[in-house]
Every structure is written in structure tokens, then in C-alpha cells.
Image (cartoon, rainbow, N blue to C red; front, top):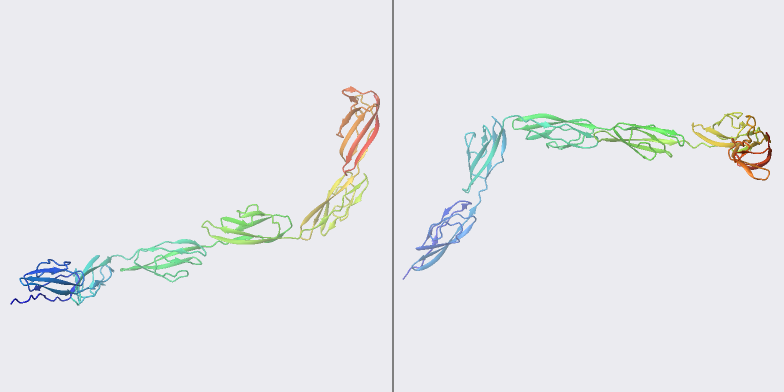
Length: 468
């Protein structure tokens, strides 16, 4: 009788991740382990196993009677210990360092630690040092970790920049040179622990910050210059219709007026305005930084005054007529020559020639308006009946004398009706020749066509005697 095969594997305690354990199989002369992952040898009774997760290993045990299979469970646990965060200390001072997750701890290098076996020893490194810790968990797992203690030797050297902003805008401050920052509360700042806070002051403001490191803290400050453009524009006034005035602005270096249509220079601090009616002018004033301010002014318009100088009229030479002005205000007539009074409402006019009179009225606001009236003097005409073209310088030419004449033409005819002379210039005279030849002593017919200044047209005929 042959005994049945009896395969077995010694049980294994819980192991830690990364640890190695030796398996022990019994009951045969040959062995075949599976799965092969993590095993040092799958053909021996006592291989080493380094699994990367909990798993079950099987072994087939073989002898002369046959084979049998056994299994063993390997349970892995995770050691969760770790070193604490890196930290800072000032040279000559100590700082606590720490680790978690262990039952025991072993720190190195140990020379600058007060207790290298403590969970939280005090470290006093002479310079920046990396501390390593071996953490043994309550389950017996080993965890290796490290942290750095940075050693500072001086107080911080903060660098803070001043800045300039326009009123109503924000600025971002910048500070460097420390590990931690604490801004003092002030108007316009909210992020008190930021190295780059945004501030919105409403006036010039100093912002003070405490820059600190492990050796201590240093105060510094940033000055924010708040620029405000105070724009002014003048004058607010009332002008007469059609008048111009000069507008002024101040407070900056560049200017932009609106509405620009009635201005001589919309981009100047001084500009000439001719408003078509009551107008509110706005000016935007900028400084070299680009800050802006605005101002307004109002130009109002007095009512339009009214004047009427009356209707045009005509008189004969030597006569007179009365002019009458209509309107409310003081009146002045011009030209004053030939008037009985130049500041009367109704002066008497005795012009020797057709004259256009201008009536200027000034109302209670000082606004002026004008109107005109023309007094036409009826034209006069004198034509001599004899001339003597003998070259003695006396009465050598034939011409007409006329006043108040706008258009004029003189024609001379011989006894046969032939035209022998023509001129349209009243100052020219006939010298008694025709085609350069002296005309004979005779009586000649003349005709004058003229238009007077008052528009009246006339044609006059007559005779002239040529005598030598």
C-alpha cells in the first residue's frame, strides 16, 4: 500500500509593501510554483517572494506516487508614514521637524538634533541640511522619507516700488526680499498678506509692509502718487447774436472741446467760439500721465434786436426828405453829412448825390443791428450848344455834364444823319474831327441815352454848333 501525497506550504504573516519573504513547501521531491511574478525561483521548495500586491501563490508537489497542490495567501499592508514639510530657520536658532505614521523614528544626521529618535525633534543645523527619517510603522513596515531645513543668515531686504496713478484707477504694488508679507491696513488695500496687492487709493497714500523671514522682519513702504486733473473752463456768459468770444480752459497739457463745429481750435486751451445759439461747451483736459478731467461752460444768446430804416425814396437835386427809423434802442445814422441829426430817430436828409444811409441800433443789452435806406437824387444833364475846336485850349471839345448817372452814351450825327462820334464815358469829349479830319463848321445833332442811379432811363436829343 502506498501513502497518498500530502503537499503543504508554511503560512506567512502579513508583510509590508516592498519586503521579501521566503516560502516553504513540503511533501515531495519536485516543485512547480505559479504564478511566477515576484518569485526568485519557481522550481525549488523555498523560493523568495517579493509581490507588488496581495496575492495567492500555488505549488505543485511531485514524488513517485504522483502530485498534489497547495497554496498560501500573502497579504501586503502599506506603511503610510512620511516626513513633514520643508521648513526655515535662522542660523543659530532651532526649529521643530516632524514625521508621522510610525511607531518608532530614526533621524539622521543626528548631530544637530536634540533627540534623533523623537517623532518631532528640534533641529539646529549650522547651514541648510536635509534630514532623513526611518519610520517603522506599528505593523512593522519601514518607510524612508526626508525633509530640508533651510538656514537663513540675515534679515530680509525688502524692495518696494513707488508708483503714480490717476484718481479713480488702481495700481498693483510689488514687494520682494522676504518669505512672508504683512501689509498694514490702509485706505484702498484688501489683500494684506499678498506680495502683489492691488490698491485703489483716493488720495496720495503710503502703504507699509512687514517683510519677514526666519531671522525676523523689516518694515518698508510704497508711495502711491494719486494724480487728479482739475479742469476749469470759462467764461459762462451771454453774447449778442452773431458775435464771437474767446473761451479758456486750464488744468492740463492737452485739450479737446466739443461741440467743435463752432470753434476755431478744438484742441487748444484758448479757442474762438461763434455759437449759432445757446450752447454748452465741454472740454476734456489731460495731463502728461494721461489722467483726465472735464469742465463745462454755457454761452447764452441775447434776443435778436430789430431795426428798420424805412423805404428807399427819391428827390430832385436841392430837395430834402425825412428818414424814419423803427426799433427799440439808441440809433445812429451814417454818413452824417447831409443829415440834420445823426442820432435822431427821424433826421432830415438833403443829399447832393444819391446816398445810402446806414442806421445802427444798439439795444439795452448792447447788441447792435443795422439796416440801410437809399435816397436817390434824380439825375441832371447839361449839354452846351456851341464849341470851338480851334486848339486855343478854350471850349475845344463837345461833352455833356451829368449827375446821378449809372449808364451813359453820347452819339453825334451830321446833317445827313451819319453817325460821326460815339462814347460811353461821360468824361470824354468830341474834338470836332471824323476819321482824323476836321469836320466843317455846321450844326450837328446829338443823342444821349442814360440810366440814372434810381434806375430811370432817359433819351435826350439836341443840337450843337461847331464854330472856328
